[in-house]
Image (cartoon, rainbow over all chains, first blue to last red; front, side, top):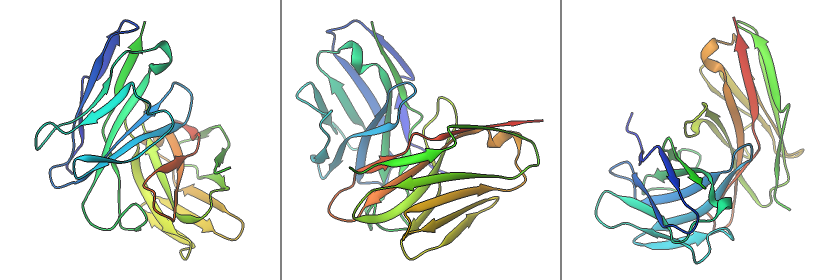
Length: 119
Length: 113
């Protein structure tokens, strides 16, 4: 089965530094998402992206965060100035271009995540 | 407030036994409910997806039920295997114009030989 690929699997950074998390969604998918999971807590929605623009974002996704699809295959999440509380597992997800999350035949495919540790 | 609550938090069973995990939600309006399996250090993998009109859905040894009136769902695992050890997450989608999924905290299942 095709997979969503995320790199790196682990990222350690100093507080205040910029980080870019990379994702390669499944090739025929057009909707892309970033979620995060702080250790021991629920998975939380960050942002959804379609047709080269953000379609929805959560309160967590403030001005320090940005997303980009720089070419036909990559989807990136940038955190401009990391804080200690940004430490979490960040998951990229994608889905095909038909139906929607409200369609029962619709699956959201998640990557294995990038564990970000801010020191 | 839109929330998804799961019980128990954790569960230990012996290989070959059955178990049932519970999910209660207060999400409104409701579109569909999903169960995901998440292995440690991995992304969630979809097991089942149900709308309000579906009472039950199976995927191999996994059977999910949904009662949209009481806003409850369950995931039943039959003849558990060691590979079933994982977190099982209940996820709800709202029905108006949003793609945001609402996740529960998950049930951590451990299957011992």
